[in-house]
Image 1 (cartoon, helix red, strand yellow):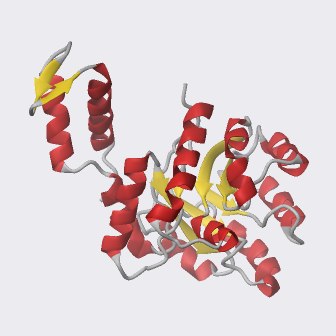
Image 2 (cartoon, one colour):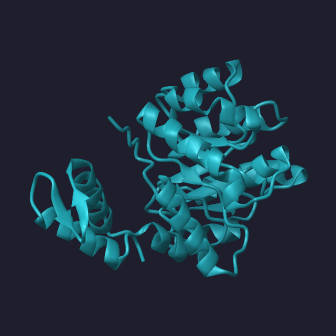
Image 3 (cartoon, helix red, strand yellow):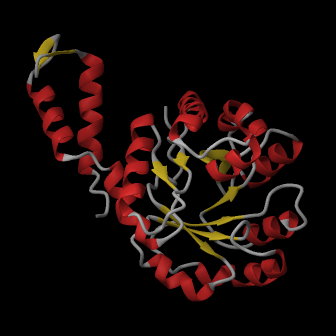
Length: 273
């Protein structure tokens, strides 16, 4: 049985936590979650300022507000955990998640208060992904593709990352967790690329995609939304009745009808446009 945990969003948007003047714009962007970032988007000298500003972003959005904390082993991790534990945030994003005593202790400590989205962005994290996904304190996996490529020395291309992406989908499914979130599209001026990247991730089994700019929100929704042709096909399949029948020259049986039901359910979910 899949666990939803209230974090079933499609297009969560990062905003630097030290830029409170951007919080309202992020909340009004159409994103179905806002991520206040204490990690990569914030320079070391601005970490304390960012931590002080987090509370200003709470309550601005009708959707979940999460905080990406700094990774375990960093100089800022302990203070970040203490902060989010004292505030009514909806969850945390843990960067460079890898199995170890620190992760297990953190997940156990926060299990009843804050769900954790584990960001997989290292080779060891990918190796551990199945175990991480199965841990009760972990609500969802996400792919930190940029950092992953930097560590692996590989290109940030679909071909190079296919195996890693597929592993995260498999790990999430086996653990009964939500489909994972795909990594960011770095270009903020190419809506077609963001939409194509989202559609590719959807076709692999991802459930959403991380965004770094409000202009990416609409294209990401469009990429994950079933198109008219898919919806029409799904209705034809379900109208064909039970048993093994032919639709559009192809055989249809129970697994195909399951996919058709899924397409219609996603279309009826009325993702924001």
